[in-house]
Amino acid sequence: MAGNVVNLNRFRKKKQREEKAKQAEINRIRHGRTKAEKERERTERERAARALEGKRLEDPASSEPPAEG
Picture: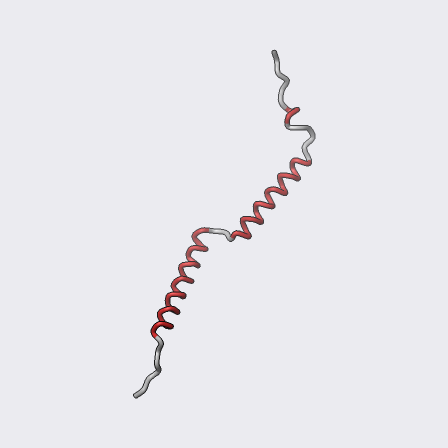
């Protein structure tokens, strides 16, 4: 008549961890990209801006029309 002994604390904590993991997955989907993805995109934008700036033919300051006065 002796059945399996179940540690209720272990069972409760395991269930709590599983629920937390499910919520974390929902949050990852809901809130988008990882920190690494954001950082990669930021560095790519900066690199593209530097490349574009390096290909300018004239200074941005000299492109202003001369002041009449």
